[in-house]
Length: 408
Image (cartoon, rainbow, N blue to C red; front, side, top):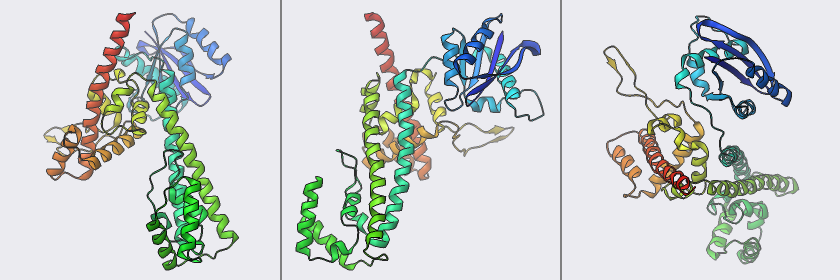
């Protein structure tokens, strides 16, 4: 038994090699994540006798180059959750935090849990691309929220209430929002209030026609009346117009990017074998569906439903000591925050639809009727949704791959 512990960091890793009984085969040494460093590591490990198993932490995406290089070289590679290494005791009262000490700790972890180590299988390229695209979508969406709030803050001082004239549902053609495009053209309340209702209606009708929006005379009357009643804190001048124009252009650039990302996420998700099954589950839409597949990955890597629920961090682990047994427990939140965010969106959608035939909604509605707190039945609904997802998707994948093997 020869355990290779790798402490991964950006651009380099620290490697330690241990055997049972405290034997140190190789003292910790550093390897750069380049062609020379990785090929040298492979050559070094091949010169060691014994059953070699390599263990490293799942640290961001820094582990991928060294994991792929060792996997391609034929070594047993295990990528473990960093929380498991952090909570693992290396039989020492001293709290040491160095790369060398961490690599020795990881190697010791490999020896202790030798039989439980699961070999890393290279992720499907499509799944990895989908996951990366999903994370980028989240970050871009956060930037869009900040820019939208900044624009609303400006609007409240220049054309109060303009962001309430229309809904905030993005257009399917380009992802733009009507009120955002509207305030770029009618950037000050005097752009509307300074002319008659008939004149504004004519200008507004032409703007709607040129930009592909529907025109309603009732909207024109409402906007004109609101502009007449509004009070602007900023004057109508070129500086004010520049502020609004820059804010709108920045926000629309984000909306354009999000539109492209949604299309790419859907395209990548459609290449996965479970796509049709996932999209048929109520609550999995054009955004949440691909995000689910991106964050969960291949469900067959989870041994049971509870493992997937724990991965999402929506489980409530037991807390008992002696005669004490806690009846009220918090969720662990030790899994993927990205998956929890997607699950919260899905359970919110299910509550809005309130389909009495949906088992997840039935479960949440029953908890709500019992007087449970909002977050309690939302988290319970998320766990229920994951168990249903696991059962349906795993059954579909097993049938699909069994059928393809028989055909071959």
